Image (spheres, rainbow, N blue to C red):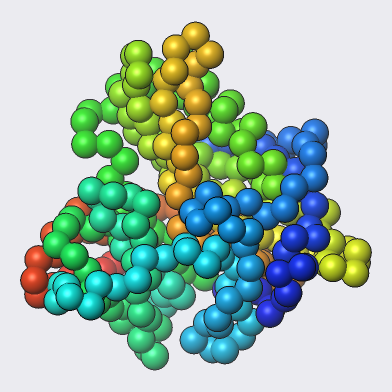
Length: 270
């Protein structure tokens, strides 16, 4: 996977919007107003920043998307994946709005995290053709009913019209009044790309992975309260298009970090 080419902020703001839902399959929604690229992680439009390890283009993200390492925290993690990794992130279970970006080594398999405060962390690994995640979505036993799931899918499907393809990858929560649920959400923008000159960007897509947090607010059903974007990337015509398979791995969930660097050894990616 390559990150998107360096494009101006004006280009990002010029793109037009659409929406959808799914989990089992994805659905498209063709009735939605124009919007700029949304960002709930820092209140800023997405823009092109930095470049990947191969110095190809940049990555679309909010300026405040990732949490800076804490220079006063000696904790960290090391791991080696069985397959090549393009990017890696660690999310503390105590605050899933904090996302620490890992460093991928020159062998494309070694991953390191530094400056992590004491906490339990879930890890997310992005590969060219799959995503592996260890999100702890709910500490309690899942009690969501089919009615809850249907309502959650409907409310997420109506959110953020910029994305016209959505899939609820995994969800967990508690049913009943003021019930809460967390969702691993993958979204795609697949249609109607325009650059700052109004040219149609044929063959381009945008992929986003988020955590979505929902609550049952009573008669109106489940509502989307907040989302936390983990990564957003531009998909070129010669890259793998559409929604990527996402797999949950227990080995990536709930890793306790204290005041030392923890070596997780080799992580097998099935």
